[in-house]
Amino acid sequence: MSETETTQEAAAKRGWFARMREGLSRSSSRLSEGITGIFTKRRLDDATLEELEELLIAADLGVTTAAELTATLRRNRFNQEVTPEEVRAALAEEIAKILEPVAEPFELDPAKKPQVMLVVGVNGSGKTTTIGKLAKALREEGKSVMLAAGDTFRAAAVEQLKIWGDRTGAPVIARETGADAAGLAYDALVEAQRAGVDLLLIDTAGRLHNKADLMAGLSKIIRVLRKVDETAPHDCLLVLDATTGQNAHQQVEVFREITNVTGLVVTKLDGTARGGVLVALAEKFKLPVHAIGVGEGADDLRPFEARTFARSLMGLDS
Image (tube, rainbow, N blue to C red):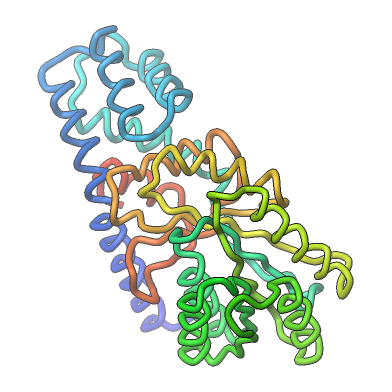
């Protein structure tokens, strides 16, 4: 790699870090201000640890995670005077340890051609936009991608996917509103095999108010795909909206009942003070987090990096 390319890559990374810090500012401000309020000129005693644990729970890090983080501080710094900055740095370090095992960028398996990814999540979570952004990133890497507009109930979702297809040069398989989603998925996989594409991304409906319908629809898509390729789908990506906070836990549980969720994308981290929910999800479910979204731009979905996220969440520099 040339020196110019290295400089450009470093600048891009700095730019993304700045965007992520800005995106997580609502979450980090809440935590930073709370920690400063607790630890200004105070020792790390039982009372401060209790207040800290309550703050972490309120920031959606979850009861288990909050208890673990405060227990670590108790072991290492109990009855010592600590500054708010030291507490934030110590917490960022421990949060990074929780997140590192799940930080797994999505990678294509060249042995699977096409690799079939089912993208699931409740309506409004950012599924269709995530598909478009993933397609863009992979097309920029020189991979061939096909999109299937399987959320056939929402004309807007189909139109949105077609726009992303035009932007990225990825063909889109679509049908009229209300068409059978499983039939569309079947046709899309046959077409993807014929075209020899690297990845087929299948959008799906996410009407969680009727779990039975959701289960039946997704189960049918999987059954039909296996008539074409008995190993499909190879991936099932669950897209979660960070603004839903603790409801994200229920969504993971519901979709895991229906299908084998293989990885997560967490979107809209810039629109919430609940960014801590990602830590709670990692602690509880141990599912790979492939990417996070901190904005609407096409480049605002990026591979998840544990340390960068942990430090941004605590309002610290990279």
